[in-house]
Length: 296
Image (tube, rainbow, N blue to C red; front, side, top):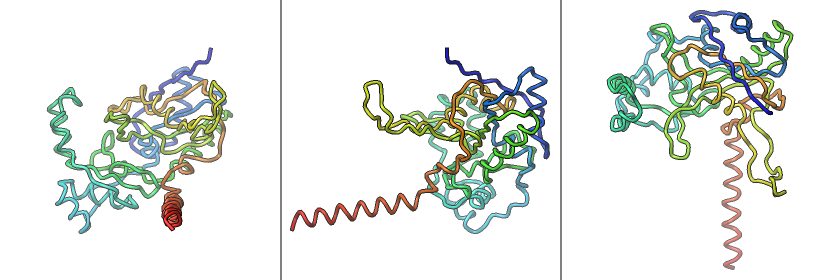
């Protein structure tokens, strides 16, 4: 029988720079969990950033003219807008959250708190972050953060995952993979909500490279590019929860995966945006030329 185990590890509250790898190893041991070769350590991006002290002092942010204009047009807080702009390469689009009021009873069990949350966030900016992710508000987050501070997902999470992996090996002697998870909006098959997705990884191939593999009937399939690290994060999220940061680390045991020294950033579509654009343009003009020759 092929089985997987997802084991949640509770950590103490972290509000200043600490040695996260040591805390994970110590807490796993204290909770009776042995870290073994080929385990996958899933950590939230928030706990990782908090352990490094990568906070933003909100009071130090001064809105630019651009941020003030966007704020005026959308109702979004100008300081939030400025933080998002500073940590983004490009703004893709901005969505008003007002439409959610009409379905608040379907998305919130506590309507009063839900409406209060909507009043605080009047619009969401979807951007390409400085590290290449397509994200809402550049990953800006205040929850479970000391008052007056915020965090954004603007760093090399692959490098941080690699560092955590090395440190855990030094402490335990075990070869593990590390995946960094973050929560993001998703519209999947018409379903609106949030999913935990991978923003960094080390020691594991982010995708299953099985495109063209034969199916049960011997036919090459148009598929097989499962985003393995996202699937791992989605499973871990069932233990981590979406509101209270009680289980920021999950150890996955029993998963068969392919080792890789590449990380999540190596499979981002934004990395290949210019190349993809050239391919589309070449294909477009090639079709036009072929049509002209057919007419002639």
